[in-house]
Length: 76
Ligand SMILES: [Zn+2]
Picture (tube, protein in one colour):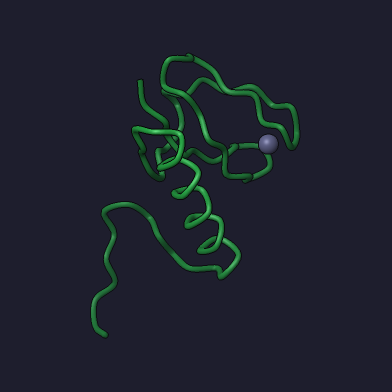
C-alpha cells in the first residue's frame, strides 16, 4: 500500500490518496477523479511520511514555488 499526493483537476487542491483505491473524492469541491489520470506530486509509504509530505508540498504551494517533478531550474 502506498500514499500519493495528487492535485484536484477541478479546484487545484492538493490531495492525499491511498493507492489501494481507484478514485479519490476532493474534500474541497467534492469532485471525484480516477487516480491513474492524475499527476503524482509525491509518494509515501507510511501515514506519517504522507502527512509530512503533504505539509511540505502545501508549504511550497503557498510559497508559489515550482516543484514539478523531474524539473530542475538551470542556474543558481
Ligand atoms: Zn477539488
